[in-house]
Each structure stands twice: as C-alpha cells, then as structure tokens.
Image (cartoon, rainbow, N blue to C red; front, side, top):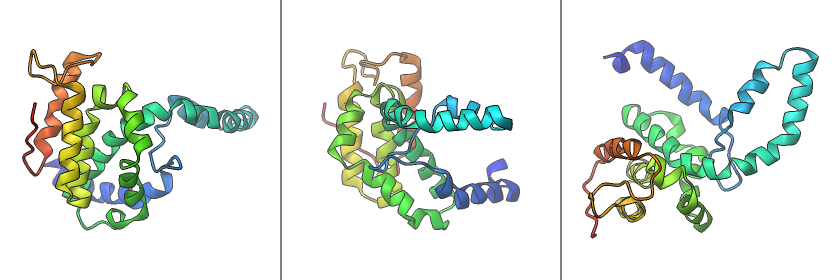
Length: 194
C-alpha cells in the first residue's frame, strides 16, 4: 500500500515536522482557514507589482481573517480529523505533544467556539464537525465523555427524524449522507438518545 511505503511515510513525517511553523491561528486557537486570495498573492509575489500586492494584502488581512472566522470555525474539526488520522498512523511524532495540538483542542472547549459553530454553515451542516471533533477527543485526549458530547451535538443539529439520516438543515444532502464515513473512524461506540 502506498501509505505504508517508506517514501510516503518520510513525506508525511516532513509535513508533520514543519506544520507548526506554517499554521496560522486565531487568538483562541482556531486554525485560520486561508482564502484562495492568499494563494493568488503568493503567485504575484514576483516584482514590484507582487510586492505592492503583498503590502495591500497585509492591510486587508485583518478584515479577511474576520470574514473567514465562521468558515475557519466550521473547518476546525475537519483539520482536527485529518490530524487525528495522521496520529493514529504515526503516533510517535513530536507534534502530538506540542503546544499547537493543545491549542487546537482547547479551542473546541470555549463557549464562543461552540456558539459560533452552531451557526456556521461549514460546521455541523457541511463538515460534520461534531463527529470530527469527537474523533479528535478520542485520539488526542482519550476523553470519551467529551467525544460523546460532540457526537450528541452532531446528531442534535442534523438528525432528520423522518428519514433517520443526518440531513436536517443541510444544503447538500448527498454530501451530508457521504460524511457518515467519519463515524466509522471512532474507536468506541456511542449511543445517542433520540
């Protein structure tokens, strides 16, 4: 399998060794979900025009970060899910005991994060944040009670009692149905009273 190849493992280890220096966080520990505009700015970074674009971007960055907050909150669990899968496969990497991972997990515990996630269209209704964050609690903190609480939040927000699917209030039913695969990643079974 490719993921078991030496080359693939070396690449993932290099990624994990360098990720902390390249992840930008909000003050509360949520990962800043960068917009595509930043990629364009990086492409333009050659010559005077590129330099002027970067200066302009730095002035706009504060507004962009504010505008991207809801999306960043909705994608925070998505990022944690990916990191949790990596930890399961490479459990001895230094990043797992870093301040970065501690900050990422602590962000999920604030009332502000929970409140904003409730209204983010990128959260429960698109990225199944409840399941993603539950998996992170299992893998990073071995905290099954917090994982249970996040599973319950996901079900509470998206259960369609008529079809018994997690499609209530979602914009894309097919994507919501497909995202159930994340529940198969759980180490434990969770019971939710409906």
